[in-house]
Length: 548
Image (tube, rainbow, N blue to C red):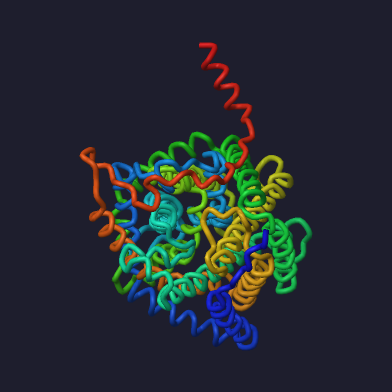
């Protein structure tokens, strides 16, 4: 049988590449004015538009809660005859590790300590006070639980529905079909949307790689004494590049699913270790009160803009920065979630991709936050001085130096960071490469061409290195936010269009939605599900149940 010829989408490949190539050249040749210009643009952008991010993410959360309690959640992606292709455990593992990347290991101890010692100026809280500790924990929860995941999952819900149930192409621009109809996906405006989201994702992934390279370089300094430098950053980046390109060649069904599964297991092991050797009573008390404060002040925290003379731009540089950063990931990460959602209901999609990762975030930041805060305020370990001297990238690693098995656990932490970076880079490489190919299907088991993956892989690392070398962590943050802001307005249009479309859908007397003609009587797509490796714990539990 003659193999189908692959056609590329030149605009998706070339335009982001040209823009970033220009930025890389300017960044290396004239770094100081370049970073200054980016910072000035960022300040104006966030002050005038950051509030839009906050309101949109609040609306996204409301929409996801509605899905969980409404008939909309009962709709099966792929139609009533579709069968799942991945089990819950691996689905959650891939969703978790591709979503957070190395973010939680970079900021796990840093944010709770930083916010308790440097609370938002306009609040009038004293550094290190009880109120600032509680505020710092609930703000950390705000940044790493329900709100950020909501951005990716809402895009994922809409894309999964239009691709699996309406028969639309596997590309981000399909999310506009509920507004403009199916002809839109072949228009020039669809290409504009796909180019924009590809550009945003490339900047976001590059930023994530930047965080990870900085943290791995700090680990190298701890073990070898080699100070962080441009040479170390470049060598670390090249090593990561080689590994994520080699492992990414096997795609979702092999490499990414396997890495995600193992990475999640490592997260559990590390989290259990920190919890058991740490201040258990303090951890549980702090987590309980912080969770209550987070819930009680949620809406107020989400709408915190601090329009005051002494605000020092705090919410724009932290809260709204994170919303913009996640928005850069959101369309492509949502598109990545689409393939795993086939055969599941929309409610299952929301639970696995939103509720469970957010619950993990509560646990992770409770344990790491309590450990570093207990050391700072009860054990006399000046973690804040370490942060001021060596930066956030060194802070989390320094926590392990004051624990049992310090060397082993620091190595283990560095391994987790590396695998997290590789897993996220792999997943986004595959998604971008699929977007770069015409007529790529969500249910296709074939992988996009390796040269296309290689192209995006090189671009990821080149952009990451230029911003580490020229601007450090501030440069990384700025480029991620600038890339994410335009996606906000696409998100507004997408959400309004999808709600209007679903309001017009016919429904049964039970209030359940009628499926579209494309999938109402369609058989399963025939793709073989991923084989499920028997779990010893699950087998033991089933045996116990049967005996009783």
